[in-house]
Length: 290
Image (cartoon, rainbow, N blue to C red; front, side, top):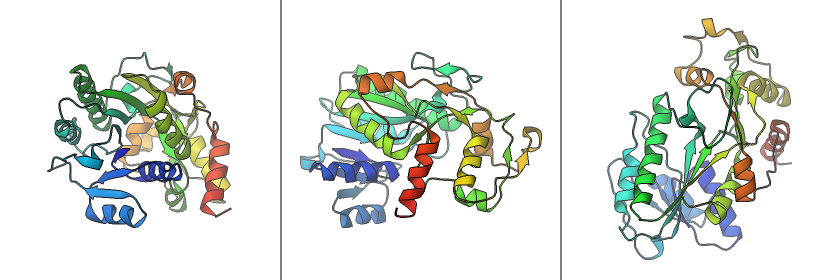
């Protein structure tokens, strides 16, 4: 397999593949990241997709491609995806699994959302992801290869918890104002990615979440309680400007509940952590070496 963007999810996927004695090749943004992967036994190259077009030959021309590289931090399109797709041969037989975001649905006023809902991205970070989806669809429509799009909820897990925020006592809005949010444990996401490559329908979209929506206040309170930290101070949405980051406020202004039944039925995935309680307990055990 070839992994484009080998961050937390990519490293876990690479480690899982190596236990199955599968060949893994990674493209990352910087030389230090590549060196770290190579030291861990994974073939890696550094390619800056902001300025360079990668080349694929020999072992690097893998059919199975996991595209995990994020878009640039600004703008409403994804030139990194454009450069990557331009680098592939026109007669490509690649199969690409892409991690997108559930943010492409925009604010759904707390409604249940399945894959039939029309995308309506409202913030730039979601517009960039949707642009990447559209580029992949155009590449697919031109007959260049296969694609599977995963619209992924908020990722949590070991070392991906808001412990620093809680220690700093950054405020959070109350439960009565908090929107519906959705999550997926990082280990379950890795299994979903593997299953999507194997079982995902060509051109299909899958919502990726644990299927148990909650809200942001409840999430922070649960993490605080489990790690014996004080719960965050309360702030109203009316007073949140200037006290919460613009990025967090953009999340708090969108509400939806994700239907994950298509993921479960078509990909054949059995989630290890279908509830936040189970996922948080496992995360704490992993962080403490239990």
